Amino acid sequence: MRLNVVAYIFQETFRSLKRNNWLNFAAAGTTAVSLFVLGIAILLVVNTEHIASTVESNVEIMVFLKQELPEDEVRGLRPKIAGIPGVEEVQFISRDEALRSLERQMGEGSNLRESLGGENPLPDAYKIRTREPQQVGSVAAAVGQLPGVEKVRYGQEVVEKLFRLTRWVRMIGMTVVALLGICAVFLIATTIRLTLFARRREINIMKYVGASDWFVRWPFLLEGVILGGVGALVAAGALYFSYNTLVSKLQETVTFLPLVND
Image 1 (spheres, rainbow, N blue to C red):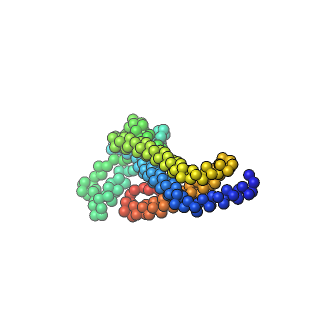
Image 2 (cartoon, helix red, strand yellow; image 1 turned 60 degrees about the vertical axis):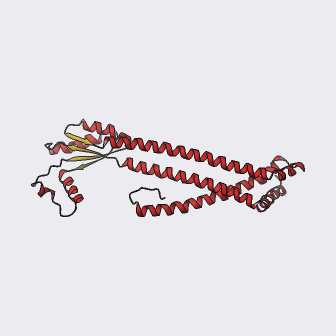
Image 3 (cartoon, helix red, strand yellow; image 1 turned 135 degrees about the horizontal axis):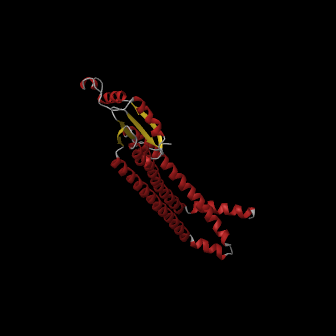
């Protein structure tokens, strides 16, 4: 492509941007709004996934041991539990430590040991974390078969409902993003077609005087890149500002909610 042709394409592009400012403003605005709505949906899905993963990773198994179990057998259970496939971390909680933790939760001044006549009814326990949240059930079943284990608790019904809920949330979120993405593409494509239709007389004149198809297309392509870039930058800036503002407000009021803020 000759230099004078390239110069003409750029001149024609910027001349068209000035001449059709309202039409171009509508095209850039449509692109910005479409991408902004799509960005909101993506951010919602990303945060929902982050919250679901955080909740799933906090699922723990509590293993309560028999009261009369000898000290060496209590300690000997640790390597057996750690050797079960899927176990990530094993933490021993002595009965005295469990009682002190319960007293701290009840507040200062509480003395459960005195209230219980100097006895500690709590058993020794192990707290287990799995590598994958879905391994909780199988690990709990395997731990329950070990000698010396009295009870295994992990809130089976609640955990199963939680996993079902997070699966549905992920599926719905991805479906919504896909649908909004299709709608955004359709809306932007429709805007481009309307823009070309509004300028059909200009296109026909250029073809009538002998301009090739690519000679006609290049200014429109370059114009589309510029308008699309402007719309994308506006959408990205609006998303960045509104999302950071919303996250900062939520973190002040809803401190327990794990949101993506990077």
